[in-house]
Amino acid sequence: MLDLLEPGQLDPRVDLFDFNANFQRLRHSVDRSELKTAIKVPNGNTDPDALAGFARAIADNSTMSAELAGYDCVAIKSCYSSSAIKTDEQLANFQSGTLELVGRLKQINPRVKIVLITPPPRRRWLTSIPDSQRAAQFCSWMLSLKQSSVDVIDLHSKLSENGVLARRFCRLAPYDQHPNAAGSRAGLELICRRINELN
Image (cartoon, rainbow, N blue to C red; front, side, top):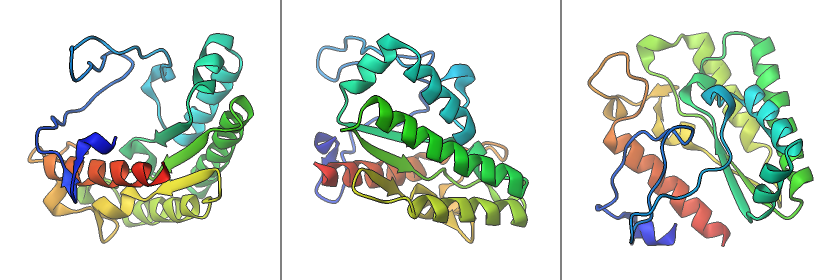
């Protein structure tokens, strides 16, 4: 990832767009050949409890387990839907799902460095104060998981203002939860920089 960064900022030639690894393929930066995406997220659901089930599926599949065993670092980020935590029970499910996810990945590949990325915040008018407070609580809990083999990148705080997506990072379409280009760039700079620091 180091080649994506110029001193202090993301290379301006980097093109940012929403990418679904289940249906799209990244291309090599030099010869434009398609890069393999062998591990797909079932139903595109990236909430922590669903990712725990995803990790169980990987553990039960020898091909996917072998591929995961070849990585020295795995970074995991849930979608903004993981900041819509409606109840304390859902919060507890997200926490237990995250712990199971980490445990399963370490079981498959004991040497892997796991990087958890806190989920981005939701827009002010598409959340509630209790929901945003539970989201902040979940992200704080995630940060407490830092240890020698697990790192946590706080994307939520990077993009938030008063617990919701900062206005400067909102897209013009009022019901689009994704951050705009400035928010995507700020988040990617943070993620690239932190993962580079691991090497």
